[in-house]
Image (tube, rainbow, N blue to C red; front, side, top):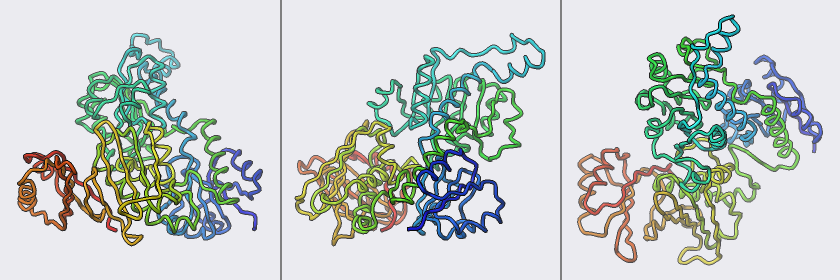
Length: 531
């Protein structure tokens, strides 16, 4: 086997090169090259390590014809075309834990700095002024702090704010009441509720379709007069135009930003306001964090290039090639069961039980569990993948229970997912027909059989006459065509469940109409990719 060769394409700690060399990997540290220079050398390397400057997409990625692994020294992989990498069999790794403390500390520093107007007070004093009365600050002790997102970074922020003797409130649909109690925080149900009760609001969630403009004009209007808003997460989560008006009018005492809708941000209206404190996306900019991510990415890439082991990959599970072929149909089934559950039961999960029966019980079940968790958690979290889903579940205090038995009746194989949380318990089971066709076969222990794909409406109702006719009438009124209608009944005949496949997705108005029907218990719109 030839010695693998790695190109470090962006500036990072020298420790990365040291790790590669110590492991017997040839390394070239060549950051800052022009586009033409990058294209000229890209085909010489088995691995490429980057931060955010080098964009491994399009022409440059195509030129890297030998590359087997790309390592991102940091969390975000927006500068890497992971879809193309997946198709080419290139492993993409990140280092999700190297800069969590550093980013959390910056958020807390912004809170303290904005509360005491430290930047302006420093500039005034250095200018020879002595304006004590101008810089009347806000004491943080006993104030209410609101944290949106209690993952890796948000949980650390909660801990640090408790150290400042603040009352900490959290909005995060993926932590259970038990997890919130363990953290010593107060969990709230909505962002609006959080905004209305806190003196400081700080954001620690990824930028997704669901979180874009999460903090809009209506939410900012709900915030207390004189409160503060902090964003060290991602630009685009806060409506900057609305924030500008709130800070200019004095409704908000202050805002502090490390991230912006458009970066690099050199001409932003917020920069003109004295009560807006800005830094240039320096959340990960400490010596310790940069060394941590550099060492981690080098160790991970060396592991893969030398012995094939995979960690913190964003596009592939940690399994062998032979297992991948065997597990593929089960992984698809598991992912769909998780996605179904993630749209069926509201978040706030405290326990996930996965039961394997029959042939599947004897396989490598870890990737299947990760696929289930990925489907479950990914409905609101873009960073979830088949590799990190288990870690994310543990961070949110979700207890995982695994059970396996070789016998399964009446199916040769069965995967059952039971999720318990703040909103009750749900159970969904699925199997493979002919070894490759996924099917749902049970919902809350009611026998029902349907392919898990497309637009679906789930109904749970008291087992009374007339429900089906009323449902059909509503769907007909809204010109929604039914593709399939499957029914199941509880053994006690107390309730019934239905899965309806439809040609067009039902609107919120349609779901509300269905939910108001007599004897209706629950209505959910569930959308899954086509098989």
